[in-house]
Each structure stands twice: as structure tokens, then as C-alpha cells.
Image (cartoon, rainbow, N blue to C red; front, side, top):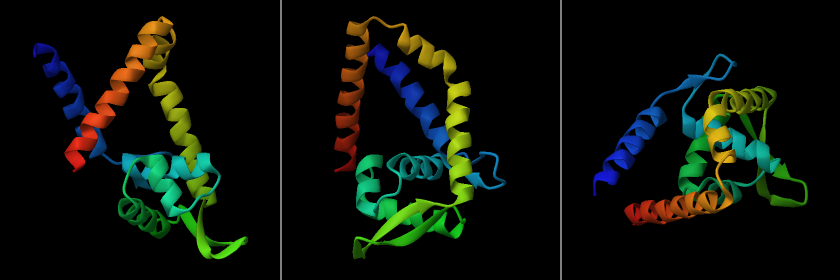
Length: 145
């Protein structure tokens, strides 16, 4: 299993990145889970906690905790759904939208070489890469049980 060492190294580095907070140009340091939550709400154009959890691949409880932190930081607001008064809709504040936009720009610049590498892959290799990612996702789900 010598190839698994390379994967272990990548996963360890990913774990270290997840523990670091970054300022995306708004004067507030955000952890990757926080900025990715903002980006998910932004991409969904507002959503409920259940939809956010499903989109983010986390439990509803974890999504709710992240939302509470982001509300306290002034990046998300909770609004009553005008079509269903018992439902709460999450929306980004102006500061939250700015952080999300800066996060997107960061990835366009920072990840350019890797994105170009993926774009240059033959279609069959890209399908294999997608399949490997899907299998890894299932593999990681087994650790959550």
C-alpha cells in the first residue's frame, strides 16, 4: 500500500489547513468551514439550515452551530420566510457577501495551476478522478458512523 502514504500526506496537510483561520479582506479571520458555509449560502441565494447541511455535507446540528457563529460575526442574518412564516431563511450580510466574493477570487488565483491541470486531463482520466473522489467520500462517511 505504498500509494496510500501519498494520500495520507495530503489528508494530513488538508487537516492542518482546516485548523487555520484566514482574513478574506474583511478584517475578520474565518476558518475554512466558516468561509465555505458563507459561500454555500451565497451560491444557494439564501437557504434554510437543512438545505445548507445537505449542500455542505455536514449534519444539521453542525450547520446550525456554524450559522450561529457567523450570525455573531455579522456575516449571516436569519430572516423569516415570507412564504412560510415558520421557516427561517439564511442570507449573507454585505460583509458576508464581500468575504464570499473575496474567497472565490482567492481560489481562482491560488488554485489556478491545479484547475488548469484538471482541465488538461483527458475525459477518461477526469471521470476516473471523479470516481476516486466519490469513493473517498463514501470511505470518509464510514468514519462518521
